Image (cartoon, rainbow, N blue to C red; front, top):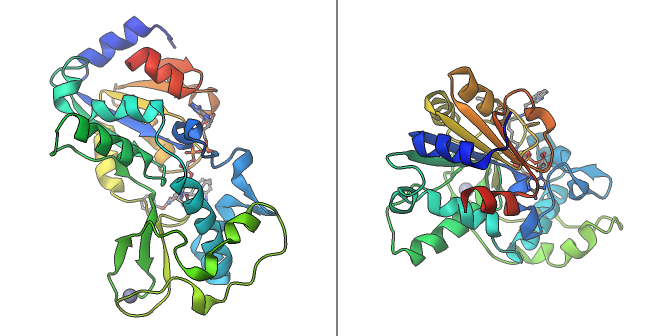
Length: 281
Ligand code: BV8
Ligand code: ZN
């Protein structure tokens, strides 16, 4: 396991198929708490227990309050230095200087959309248009999907609040006070068929987006850069091991080793908004 920057840069420049797997640690410097850190708890609920189909079936109003709270949180933040280091690597013309002839794919577990925002801003700066977007494998916080099986309505919706009934509940949400009464009939409705809508994220027990494409990318990669993830959530947590199993290298950018100790060839400990700038900037 090495922390030698020059050694890593040589591996990077000789790599042809590079994937980045990012998690909640990438957005910490933007002010978004990690999934399993202190921000992971709301009132007496563990966040993960609210991100399931059964939690939604049991209490749509409570789950919508949870997602409304997170929407309002993300609407007030911006990408950070780490996002802006990764974004240009997606643009071939810029990446040439770091790793010529390489293919680069950013796979993110994050649903905050900050990786995409940073890339769109970078594309504007460089007058680029045709660039591969990050694969948002766990969906998008601002996507809204109809729950009716025979309706294909899906939209990206940045309305604040997403519906009048949720307005102000974000102030109570984290405070642990009495649960505001929000009627099911006042929750977001599908404009096409009138049925209830749900947040467009992948809940626990649901299949991540483009997962077979992601695993194929992992099987072909010669370098996997893992940024800010605890490697608790599957199948994302298997990606680094798949790269390693086929002879690829794994580089870790995290504030702790966590579950990655046995697969990392390179470890850059510290906040990724600093370490990515030092190593890739
Ligand atoms: C599936 C959207 C089948 C929702 C999310 C029992 C055992 C093992 C597995 C399972 C099990 N029971 C069920 C499962 C499977 C389950 C799972 O893994 N559960 C876990 C909890 C045990 N997985 C699923 O259900 C998945 N689906 O398996 O379907 C299938 C599979 C393949 C093909 C067909 C079918 C679906 C999982 C998706 C869940 N949805 N998000 C929402 O957001 O509300 S996951 C959620 O966790 C977020 O997206 C988040 O990104 C993700 C992963 O968490 P992390 O990003 O790692 O965040 P975390 O807080 O954990 O860690 C932060 C890290 O940052 C830490 O390491 C910290 O040290 C570091 N850090 C902090 N600050 C910094 C930093 N690093 C760098 N710089 C810093 N400044
Ligand atoms: Zn509908």
